[in-house]
Length: 289
Image (tube, rainbow, N blue to C red):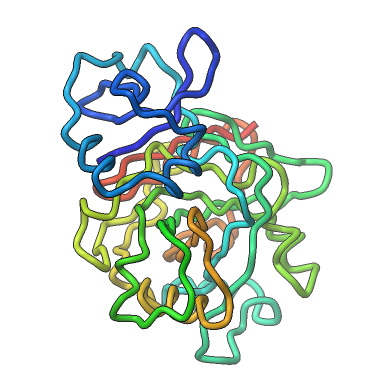
């Protein structure tokens, strides 16, 4: 099931199910959730089954505006750095001091997001403070219930679903500070979408093609099965001693092909269009302004 947050003529946020280029508003089926965070936290298994079986005429996709499936995450996004072997190598080539990995343990950092924009919304270039704007296509995992001390073999039971997340990064800010937080957290640096796909749509852990086009040029092309630290390990490790609340978003890392990885780095410029795609979820398209 593909869940979306959308706006139609009333300019009010609504929840819906994306089916064959049409959106079925959940309110028309008697579901009353304040927002997607409320749905993730409170929807019962029976209610989710009813949503999956929903049928109706719905709204043409072109008649609504899709927002990020989770426009206002309740917490910072938890992120994995250097989690594909080839990307770790290209990052170290750009700055060994900043990206030279000295441990086999996962690299975790957080990403502040006051509001996430959806597909079609612009990425601000912040030209006043950065000249090295970059993209990172990532599979984002959304936790469905509070998770604490989860064994790897049970990690799949805690996943609500998946979406596409562009971990937009200001490389000059990222490398100037010991922590990556600031260079990852400027306003507009967390586009997500186009939908949130429930976990039952994929085998666990999912093996999905992940690829990115910039101005129509293929720049990234890999599979999520190539993660160095897989989703079961990530959830188990993070939940040791730290409760992952329902709705927590985990960005699992990006494959090779980002702008800083080029022999001559190619950073995003105003007017560029970034299209991040993941098989079975869809394409997140954002112009740079």
